[in-house]
Image (cartoon, rainbow, N blue to C red):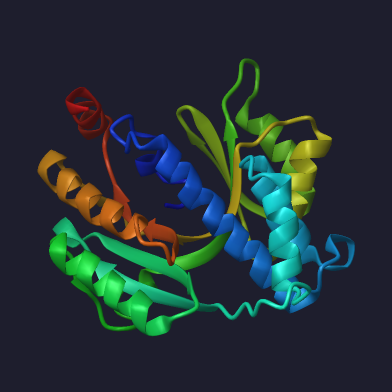
Length: 253
C-alpha cells in the first residue's frame, strides 16, 4: 500500500519476503514500460521514465530488468505493451475505505480478481465516486527520523518547492505537496543532504477511521488479498490505528 501508511510498517506483515520482492519488482517494471511507451526510451527527455527508473533502482530492481522494460515499452523488442489504469473503490470494516489502483492489460480479468478478493475477505465493492470523494491526490515523501533532524530542518529544505505541510509522525516526517511539486520536494531534500525512504503520488484522506484490534485484523485480511493481485499497483486507505492497536497486532505476530 501507499508508503505513508502506518499499515506498511507493522511487524505482522507477510513473511514471504521473496514473493513480495518479486511483486514489487513487477510493479516497477510495469511503470517503466508505460512511461517508455508514453514518452520514449530516453530518460533524459522523458521525465516520467526518469522518475520510474529512479524509483525502481531505489527498490533494487536489477538494471537488466530495467533496460529490458524500457526497450519493451518503447516497442524496440517487437512486444506490444498496452496497459490501462483502473481504480476500484472498496468499503472495509468499521467504515474504512480503500482506493485500489490497478495497471492491467486485461480490464475484465482485473475486475474479476478484485471482485473475488473483496467478496472473500468481507469487503464490499463500492459504486464509483462513493469512496473517491474522501481522498485527495498528493505528493508524499517520508523522511526517517535521525538524530538531530528536526521538523524545522525538513521544512527549510522543501520550503521553496511548494510544500503544503510537514507532519511529525513519531519515527518519521511526512512531507505533503501537490503531485506536480513532488520532484522539487525530493530535490530540495537531496540538496540539503536529508535522506528520504519513499516518495510517491498518493491518495490522502482527512477523514480517518480508527480501527480496533478485531476490525484491524479484518482490514488486513482484505488489504492483503488485494495486495496479492498481480494487477494491483497501490492501495490507499483512510484506515488508521492507535499505538495500542498496533502494539496488539505486533504482539500477535
